[in-house]
Image (tube, rainbow, N blue to C red; front, side, top):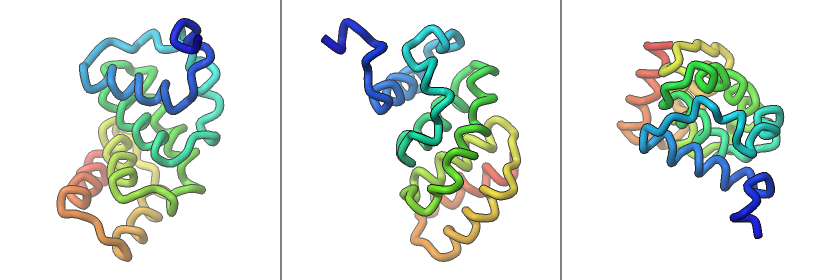
Length: 134
Protein backbone atom coordinates (compact mmCIF):
# COMPACT_ATOMS: atom_id res chain seq x y z
CA UNK A 1 0.00 0.00 0.00
CA UNK A 2 1.64 3.28 -1.17
CA UNK A 3 0.13 5.22 1.73
CA UNK A 4 2.15 3.14 4.18
CA UNK A 5 5.36 3.29 2.13
CA UNK A 6 6.03 6.91 1.17
CA UNK A 7 9.17 5.91 -0.73
CA UNK A 8 6.79 4.62 -3.39
CA UNK A 9 4.88 7.89 -3.77
CA UNK A 10 4.77 9.45 -7.22
CA UNK A 11 6.70 12.66 -7.71
CA UNK A 12 3.47 14.62 -8.25
CA UNK A 13 2.23 13.42 -4.85
CA UNK A 14 5.43 14.63 -3.21
CA UNK A 15 5.15 17.99 -4.94
CA UNK A 16 1.62 18.37 -3.56
CA UNK A 17 2.94 17.46 -0.11
CA UNK A 18 5.59 20.18 -0.27
CA UNK A 19 3.00 22.67 -1.54
CA UNK A 20 0.70 21.82 1.38
CA UNK A 21 3.58 22.18 3.88
CA UNK A 22 4.38 25.58 2.41
CA UNK A 23 0.81 26.86 2.40
CA UNK A 24 0.38 25.76 6.01
CA UNK A 25 3.80 27.21 6.91
CA UNK A 26 4.93 23.87 8.31
CA UNK A 27 8.64 23.32 8.81
CA UNK A 28 10.10 21.25 5.98
CA UNK A 29 13.75 21.95 6.76
CA UNK A 30 14.37 18.25 7.09
CA UNK A 31 12.83 17.37 3.74
CA UNK A 32 15.85 15.24 2.92
CA UNK A 33 14.40 12.68 5.31
CA UNK A 34 11.25 12.44 3.23
CA UNK A 35 11.02 10.04 0.31
CA UNK A 36 11.80 12.93 -2.04
CA UNK A 37 15.50 12.60 -1.30
CA UNK A 38 16.13 11.16 -4.75
CA UNK A 39 13.73 13.63 -6.34
CA UNK A 40 16.12 16.53 -5.86
CA UNK A 41 18.59 14.98 -8.27
CA UNK A 42 15.90 14.58 -10.92
CA UNK A 43 14.34 18.02 -11.25
CA UNK A 44 14.59 17.67 -15.05
CA UNK A 45 12.26 14.66 -14.91
CA UNK A 46 9.40 16.72 -13.47
CA UNK A 47 6.70 18.24 -15.67
CA UNK A 48 6.38 22.06 -15.80
CA UNK A 49 3.41 22.17 -13.40
CA UNK A 50 5.34 20.29 -10.73
CA UNK A 51 8.45 22.43 -11.24
CA UNK A 52 6.51 25.66 -10.76
CA UNK A 53 4.67 24.38 -7.67
CA UNK A 54 7.90 23.11 -6.16
CA UNK A 55 9.77 26.36 -6.85
CA UNK A 56 6.94 28.37 -5.29
CA UNK A 57 6.70 26.02 -2.30
CA UNK A 58 10.43 26.04 -1.61
CA UNK A 59 10.67 29.83 -1.98
CA UNK A 60 7.69 30.24 0.36
CA UNK A 61 9.24 27.99 3.01
CA UNK A 62 11.39 29.15 5.89
CA UNK A 63 14.17 26.80 4.84
CA UNK A 64 17.41 28.18 3.45
CA UNK A 65 18.36 24.77 2.04
CA UNK A 66 15.07 24.55 0.14
CA UNK A 67 15.43 28.11 -1.13
CA UNK A 68 18.80 27.16 -2.60
CA UNK A 69 17.05 24.52 -4.72
CA UNK A 70 14.90 27.13 -6.51
CA UNK A 71 17.72 28.00 -8.92
CA UNK A 72 18.22 24.34 -9.78
CA UNK A 73 14.49 23.94 -10.36
CA UNK A 74 14.44 27.01 -12.62
CA UNK A 75 17.38 25.65 -14.60
CA UNK A 76 15.55 22.34 -15.04
CA UNK A 77 12.48 24.23 -16.25
CA UNK A 78 14.32 26.39 -18.77
CA UNK A 79 14.20 23.89 -21.67
CA UNK A 80 10.48 23.34 -20.96
CA UNK A 81 9.52 26.98 -20.43
CA UNK A 82 7.17 27.05 -23.43
CA UNK A 83 5.27 24.14 -21.87
CA UNK A 84 4.53 26.04 -18.65
CA UNK A 85 1.11 27.62 -18.35
CA UNK A 86 1.01 31.33 -17.56
CA UNK A 87 0.46 30.78 -13.83
CA UNK A 88 3.38 28.36 -13.74
CA UNK A 89 5.65 30.95 -15.34
CA UNK A 90 4.43 33.55 -12.86
CA UNK A 91 5.09 31.19 -9.94
CA UNK A 92 8.59 30.33 -11.18
CA UNK A 93 9.68 33.96 -11.60
CA UNK A 94 8.06 34.92 -8.27
CA UNK A 95 10.04 32.11 -6.60
CA UNK A 96 13.31 33.38 -8.10
CA UNK A 97 12.53 36.85 -6.78
CA UNK A 98 11.56 35.53 -3.36
CA UNK A 99 14.99 33.91 -2.96
CA UNK A 100 16.77 36.90 -4.57
CA UNK A 101 18.13 34.89 -7.46
CA UNK A 102 18.39 36.70 -10.78
CA UNK A 103 18.43 34.08 -13.52
CA UNK A 104 18.97 36.27 -16.56
CA UNK A 105 18.29 33.50 -19.06
CA UNK A 106 14.97 32.56 -17.46
CA UNK A 107 14.02 36.23 -17.17
CA UNK A 108 14.85 36.89 -20.82
CA UNK A 109 12.83 33.95 -22.08
CA UNK A 110 9.93 34.78 -19.81
CA UNK A 111 9.95 38.36 -21.09
CA UNK A 112 9.55 37.04 -24.62
CA UNK A 113 6.69 34.78 -23.57
CA UNK A 114 4.93 37.54 -21.64
CA UNK A 115 5.10 39.95 -24.57
CA UNK A 116 3.56 37.32 -26.84
CA UNK A 117 1.13 35.79 -24.33
CA UNK A 118 -2.16 36.45 -22.66
CA UNK A 119 -1.09 36.97 -19.05
CA UNK A 120 -3.42 38.40 -16.41
CA UNK A 121 -2.54 41.63 -14.63
CA UNK A 122 -1.78 39.67 -11.46
CA UNK A 123 0.57 37.31 -13.30
CA UNK A 124 2.41 40.23 -14.89
CA UNK A 125 2.62 41.91 -11.48
CA UNK A 126 4.10 38.77 -9.90
CA UNK A 127 6.60 38.43 -12.74
CA UNK A 128 7.55 42.10 -12.44
CA UNK A 129 7.98 41.73 -8.68
CA UNK A 130 10.22 38.70 -9.27
CA UNK A 131 12.38 40.70 -11.68
CA UNK A 132 12.62 43.63 -9.28
CA UNK A 133 13.52 41.66 -6.17
CA UNK A 134 15.88 39.06 -7.65
